[in-house]
Amino acid sequence: MSPMLDVSDDVRAEIGEEEVAKLLAGETAPSSYDCTSCRTPGDTGQERTSTVLFVGEETAVLAFAHANCVPSQIVRVTEEQIQGAVRTITGDSGGAPGADGEQAVLKVTCGQVLIDEQLRAAIVVEPNGAIARPGSEGTTDEFLPLLMEHGFTAVTDLETMPAAIPGWSVLMAAGQLHAVLQPGPEGNPSDSWWQAHQPLPVTDEWRATANRTSTVLVFAVPSGGLGEQPREDLMRQALEKAAANGYLVAAAMPLAGT
Image (tube, rainbow, N blue to C red):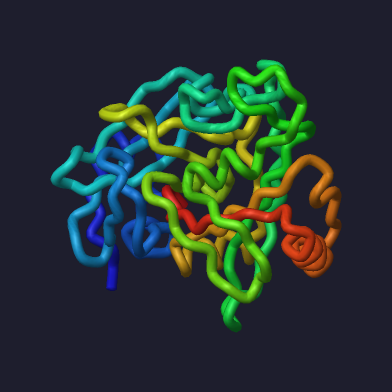
């Protein structure tokens, strides 16, 4: 069944007829999504859905919203909001800051993980150094405890599907990974928890799995917990080792965009 998408003339002109045709045919549109307005789940096969294009100076991000929340439109934003530097995760924004107030660079690795005999699209987040608690002068790494305070759960093995956490989502556009979004302060739109310096390419297989399940598993390890993994099977081994050693947390997040 074709998705029930609304594409305004402005959005159509911006993304081009070829991409519009793929969206309306269901080739690149997700079956479910996290509404970019109200942040609650939506279903493109069951309810009218607006295509919302966020446009910066160099980058455009296609997102989806309930048609009764906002109409299909182009939203002009600053390039920093879409693409900017990897952000410090501050206590005010509900995340984990860099040690001593410095920016913590979060490295993201993409791969697929087999859980309950089904492939799942996954990303692994690993900071480049210890993450201190906001306002703390200590050097204790609080990255995982801070994430668990926001709904991530400890992983003891990779055979169990991580629980979903409300308000978070993984943002993709034009087949590339742009950001992991977290709930904004009460009454405000969602905020970027991690944001790519430049959109991160993913494999066709990863993107197909993410679109099929409309879900991305987000794993997190402390600095040095994963390291470089040239193959997906080696990444799984590294995740299993991290879980066995008690330094792996995870959450399931809806896929926003395509």
